[in-house]
Length: 163
Length: 311
Image (cartoon, rainbow over all chains, first blue to last red; front, side, top):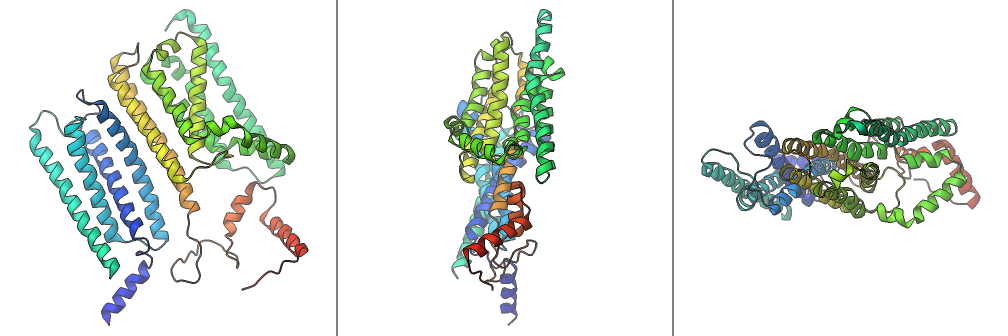
């Protein structure tokens, strides 16, 4: 009895969340991609000055990749915020799935940044004048953890959907 | 840079500034004229236009223009003002719409037809072409000797500055639709084009950091590059937010009385499901009030003998 009341109240709160399951996930992914790039810019570039604006070892492809991701992260953050507002006004917000999307997006970007941009394209390093290995390890393992957690949350919510 | 050029530099600045002053005067006159016959023109548009002109004037005349010849960082401030901020704000002023409501209905219709059929405008208002003109033009300016030549040749200086402003304006107009739109593209299409344009701008800014244009000292290039990078970001955040806000307004859910949820109480709807506020907004420039239009429709419908259903 109590459980049925509980579920019905949840249903009433966001009755359309299952219809907009896809939008919940993608809003999260875009927001995650954007927000991690924003944190990167504010914390590591501006506040700590660990990262450098430009590194002499930067390759041309690294510059293009950086420019594209920089533009993409801005557009994704702002776009995801409007999509989130759209979900709320449609009474379709699904917190768990949205958070799953954020973790997935943030993890994917951080892994891409840590492995492809920092290492392969030589854009810049996490920190200069120190032993870089622990920094790289923490960076990339954190990214991998976020991806795994994101996948679990999205898998769980997808599974719920079918029931 | 050179003292013997001082006099001609001042006249050059006035030559670039006068069109903007004239545009501002025309705009004010048009607002005054059309307000006598029609609903008051939006104050927001007037303010946007005024600040847009102010930015353009700051970049073309006075200390920024003076120092821009010698200092690349200052030149970049001028570039952000003239090529990005001024065009965006002036585009928000919707000058063509203002012009159309100021002139007679007959002339306005004729002008709209001419504008809509103009192949050049079709070409230039396409988001991809506009982006290429804007960002591509900058790449040519800063990666070739054009930048050095610009400061030695007066005509080239004028042409490049006019191009920077016009390309910026055309770009803003191709991404956000507030004025008369010649060709329409979807929100996603415009977002993707915008993404590549913004990336092109950021890449160029970082490229300048390491490869200064000829004749520019390295420290000025580094600082100027950062102004271009972060200044550009700031303006582009504004532009993309406006685009997404327009999407947000347009894609609002339609009232659905059949199912629960979708309780949109803030909006006023008629029995037939018409959004009154939206109709009012669309009719703002029609010259008739909401009541007048309703009466007009009622007359038309009673003539045609349409049976109106009542729920």
